[in-house]
Amino acid sequence: MKKEKRFEVIHKEGSALRTEGIRMIAVDRETGVNYLIWTAGYGGGITPLLDSEGKPVITPSVMYYDTQNY
Image (cartoon, rainbow, N blue to C red; front, top):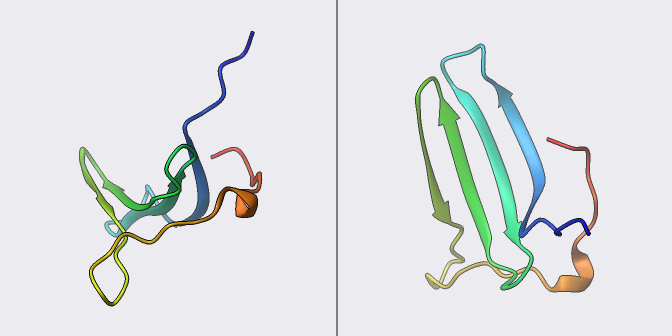
């Protein structure tokens, strides 16, 4: 049985070949929380996306959709 992925990448931009790196937005399928993921070279980071009130951006599960395999 195949285990379902917990995180779904819903947006990706940038290039690993450039100094700006790759930026992605991923959604946690269990909580709906959106995360910004940044990678460049051997470094990177992850942080939850926050709205104007400082609360995490949450995507309802009905809005998840399959995108390209990143």
